[in-house]
Image (cartoon, rainbow, N blue to C red):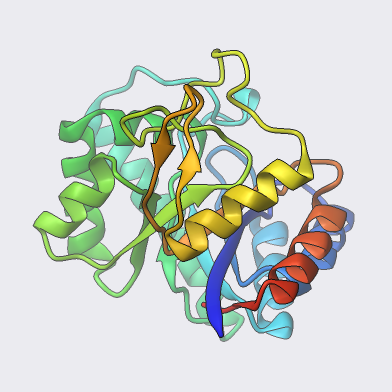
Amino acid sequence: MTSVDINCDLGEGETAEDCARDARIMPFISRCNIACGGHAGNATTMALSLQNARATGIAAGAHPGYPDKENFGRRSLSMPRQDLLCSVREQILALQTIAEHERVTLSHIKLHGALYNDAEADEELAEDLVQLIAREFSNLQILALANAAMERVAKKYRHPVLREGFMDRRYLNDHQLAPRSMPGSVMSSFDECLAQVLALSTGQPFLSIEKKPLQFSVDSICLHGDNPRAESIAQDLQQELLRAGIRLCQ
């Protein structure tokens, strides 16, 4: 049976109730990326998210971003490079420390929001971030956008990387994500999203936003946890994948 990894950004709330909502998504995914205090999250949400991931049996990783809770890490910050790298390091260490207490072994690192986008578009920033991760967190895989800068640099340093695809975002002809500002770049139809998941999981052709056939496969597919319907989407997706002979795996 073909398998696919589904990842979801979680632990981005502030309370135990937020974590309980996240926990209802976990049975239908295989990997979670836990906010570690930069763009969102706190010691309580980190601990509860790790506990829930352990109880569900899914992989847990760090989800650092720009240290900007006011804007949820969705705006690029102009800050000295060393300060940014120190912040990313401290965020990962914060989650790692709690994970050790909760007897959870972290598996990966996925950047958040504007930092994710900036690193994928800027080879120099990607280089600095990959060097940091390879030096300080050599046992953690990097979950990065397929066909972009973080993947290229990680391979250059022979650091393990998971190629990420998106179920609800259209792609450009060059295999990059279509910017959200482009009309039609975000898909809302579950059937369209499912078709793209199936294609990305099996390496079958699918259409770019400009209707050109694309063909590449990924290691993990992102399901957005901040969607109000995330739980039902995750449940429906798992059922449809099983119906297509595809199971979840890490």
